[in-house]
Each structure stands twice: as structure tokens, then as C-alpha cells.
Image (cartoon, rainbow over all chains, first blue to last red; front, side):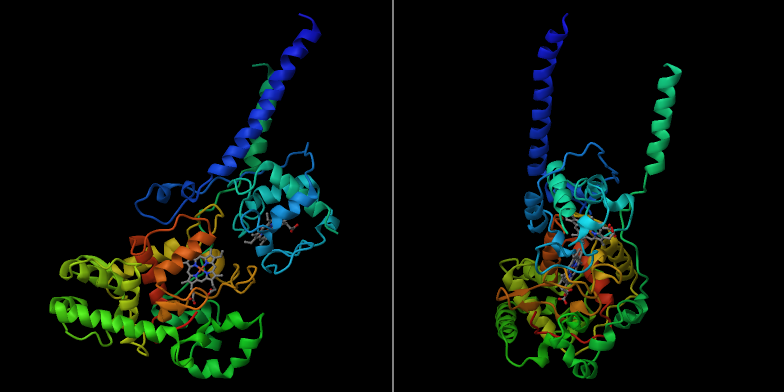
Length: 155
Length: 297
């Protein structure tokens, strides 16, 4: 088998795999419903669901997202709603519980570190009030990359 | 397995376990002494110094104009007798008409509602309470539901406008009376313990507990965009309340539903046993505080 034939076989497979991975990520985003997470009921199935385990995800090969899109995601109430707790560059009516992130680009944090904290900050602070946006599928992988790019660009 | 591969695998396991963090399914507890009732807030948010009495509210009236500190009044400056005429009073009148007309058609209904006493005066201050015959904790709303189911042609379900309006009327007959939930009753005490646990349980897609927003050190006292969550002490005293932004009466369990939606957690139906336990917990945190209906929020 020549190298060329191997490549011509593998390339479409790789493309298909990436595409299908993206499709499932987007489908997942649509189906995460409140009933998939723990609730207070003594009888409904969600009453027996446990909290999702902590995930520390710090991808070193991070391809940065789009800061403008990241800003939209961070501000939208139905998406990140980071403004509920953080000051952010260009945001108004911000909350005061979390640290001020409006100049976070100068913090020295790498995009991978920001990704890991937004994905699930419980690996640093088990009792944090900040939602685990990645673990609990509030935001997709791409959306967290976008938000990380926005924070890196905030100066 | 080749030695090198084995080493890599073992190193991987070690690295993973070094990172493993225990997953907390509860928000850290702030100790509460239930016997202290509403005064337990002194060891909690200690905002009760601003809202615990009429004198304190008058003395600290200037906080109303201070956007960073107004949360310390726990919204108590909006309570009943401090605002003269408002739609909550109309709700009380509507509730009176409902209960009167049901009672005149079916005297057994009033007897059931008043636990055989014939008068509803002052009764609500001791709710929630344990009903031995039914072997259940009863809230005012649950009593109305139960008595309507047994004595009226149609059940008046918890969460329905008729149930909320008549509950407001029943509570108004105890206005000014200090809440006295009987913690010496074992089933009530057990419900308190369960309710406290629920208050700290992390739920929903955002992984919040009630405590994430309503205990010291949490989001309490901080701006959450427009709103500032306050202490849970003293809260049940003004429910059902008239919600000015939407022009409707709201019972306590539907306030729970609204907080659940913010948490992206599955809301439960009004009257759910878990909500009843939460109500017992919160009512004990209002013991000694006067019922303040009708109110505006």
C-alpha cells in the first residue's frame, strides 16, 4: 500500500470524525435540560441524580476562539451570564460577587488556564459559587474558547 | 505489556489521582440555632439590626436611598402597615369573600379550616404544623386544599389564584402576631432538619444551592446583575405577597419556583413535600417575627 493511498483513505475519515464530533457537541447543547441535573424532589428521578464530578480540562493545544463572539456569549443571560457576578469590558449592570475581569488580558493567565477555570473551577475551589460551565454543558467547547479569547483580549 | 507502556499507564493514574478533587454536593453550612428563631440572624447575616423592629427600620430609613446597602433592610420597609392602601388589601377582601361564601354554603369547610374552633383568628401564626389525623405537615395553603377537597364541590389546589387569595385572607387574621412554629413537635423538628438539608443541596444545571445565594459569604449582599439576594430570616412573614412588577399575588412556593428557574433546576409543584420541608425550615427562621400581610414586593 502506498503512502498516498493511506492518506487518501484516512483523510476523509478524519474529516468525518471531526464533523460528527462537532454535531454531537451541538446536539448536546440543545438537549441539556434542567431535569438532567439534581433537583430537590423526594420522588422524581432528578432527586436521585448526583452532582457531576469535577473535571479539570486544560487543553494545551487550544485554538483560540473569536473574542467578539465570546463577548456576546459572556453577556447573554441565557448563555454565560458572567455579568451576573463579574465586571467585564464593555458590560453594564454587572454583579459584584466575582473578581473584576474587565482587564483580565493583563492578568498573565494563559488561554488554557482561563479555559480550565470557566470549564469547571471546582478543581481550584470545591465550594465555589461559579457554575461549572463546561462540565454541566451550559457552554460548548467552542463557546468557552470564544469566552477565553474575549478575556485574553480585555485590557 | 511492555515495561515502558506500563510505566506510562501508572504515571497517568498517579497524575489523575493527584488532580482528583472531591465533588461537593452541598454548599458549606452556616450554623443556625433553630431555638433562636428570627434572632438567629444575629449570628448569620446580622442584618436584623436594621430590619428586626419598627424602631430599627425607622432609624435606618436612609438605607432605602443607598443602592449598595438597601439589601440590609431585607425589603421589610415594604411591609403591610408601612404602605397604606395597596392591591394586597384588595386581595385580603377577595379572600374574605371567598372563604365566607364557601363557609356559609358548607359550614363543615370552616370547621375543617379552623381545626374545629370555628374561628380563624390568630391560627396562621402557628403554621406549618403537624396534623396527627392526616399524619402530615400542613401549611395554610395545604389546609385550604385539604378542606376544599373534603367539603367543597371543587378542590382548591395549592398554587391556584383562589388558594393563594384565601391563604392571604387566613394569614391576615394573624397579622401582627409573632410566628410560633412548634419545634417541640417531633415531626416538625424532623421536617426542619430535612428542609435545612435541602437548603444546602446543590441542584440544577448551574450547580447552585439555595445557600449559594442566601448565606453569608455566598452571593448574599452582592449584586447579581440587578438584584441582591438577602438573608432567609424573616422571609415567610410576608407571604403570600403582592408582586408589584407583575400585578399578582405570589405564594411562597411559587417564589421557590422562581429561584429554581434562576438555578436552572427542575421546579416542583406547589405543595410538594420538599417545598413543605423548606417552608418549615424558613418558618422556624421567622419564629418571633410578626406576620406582615398584606405586603408588597
